[in-house]
Amino acid sequence: TARQQGEGSACLASAPRMRPPRAAVAAGRVLTLLLLTASSTQNPTSALRPPLLVLHGSQTGIAEEVAHRVADAAYRRGFSPRCMSMDAYPLSSLPSESTMLCVASTTGDGEAPLSMRSFWTALRRRDLPHDSLSRLSFAVFGCGDSGYAKFNAIARRLDARLRQLGAKPLGDPGMGDDQA
Image (cartoon, rainbow, N blue to C red; front, side, top):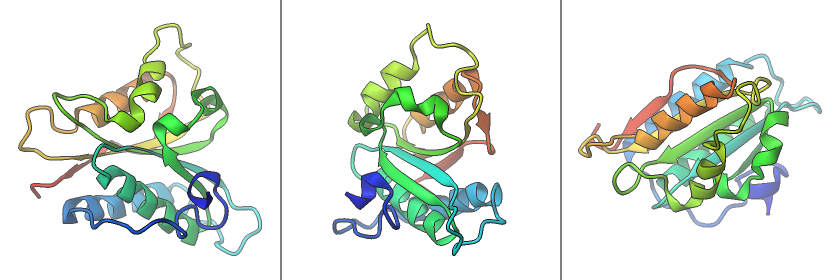
């Protein structure tokens, strides 16, 4: 589908959308600005749109919705986004990516949501070289609720692990809060 393959706007031809909490929408806008600041000189009409990988790990659909909104905004700003769940993405391709945005929710007792568990397990392998993601620039955004003890735990751990593997952060991780 267009959502997974990056054809046109990676997300415009999507299924009906749920309305995410205000905090998630606002945080998605902030994250979009952070990411697009890294390449603000892109021409939206240029035939050479820089690639952007947008991955989401979602349990209830909020992180997925935020990811698709960010991908839509990135397309309008001149990128060629591909938006999919983390588990749908082949991790072996990650070292060849240049720019990635991850939107993740935390579930249960600080656990990864179902749509990112395989990706997260593979990314945590101890035998991965510490410079394996040195070509990658990334941003992480967590969708959470500060009423829980492990608020945005997966987003924090994902950010830390990507840094350990040599990826370059575009900024500090964003922490969306449904309580805000």
